[in-house]
Length: 328
Image (cartoon, rainbow, N blue to C red):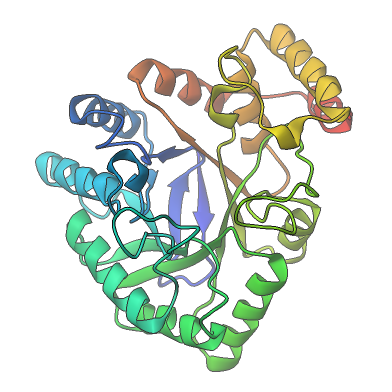
């Protein structure tokens, strides 16, 4: 396994594996026995960066989530796992009531919610300190100052280590970071957005984002990473939920544009040259990027995990990387 550093403050920064494991469906769609087997194999291979959310997976039973955090807590206790494993979780998108969702009724990012949800996550995970806590989605109804100060208080108290943001406009992330700096409290240092080799369109309205998707890592975010070397991008859904390789998993509508076939052709060509799978090439492309990117890939079986793990040691040549980058 290979590792990279999250965060700039020596008091809170962590060394994490370059491949993160997504636990979104653990304890709901993926049963406990399988989830434990995947987690065990990931740790055995040197992986130490696991991602979840307090909202996962509320849509499984129409509840408020907590399935994944609860399972990770049971796994930690059964295996005697300590702080050598970095578990990241999120708050803000959990439905405020059963039978609703994060679009129509999210819990939000008020100081009260930040406090209560962080405490609930610590209890379910069985930890005294959350290694990394994200604001899962934005909350335009709560002043950012209130949210920033609430997160900062958790860090000051030792209840949280690193802070992150997900699915927010870059101008909002920058504003929140400036507010944190002005207040003398920690700000967001990890950004979690959807990012893969294929490039989506950004002008297609989404159910939550009428001005286009704010969940994708676009040129503005990537430029922000170049300008702010202390930031790291955790790239969720790097394998597009199996759409690269499964005929029953079509690409989302925002990938339906003339550039997609060219990038797919380059990807398949590099896969043939390396003898690796298409998925492994995508992960290796992210891991070896000149920007600090950690792919976050889920796995519903040990076999899927093994394929992903093999990407860590796949080295793409400069020519192969250039061809992947240039295809459009």
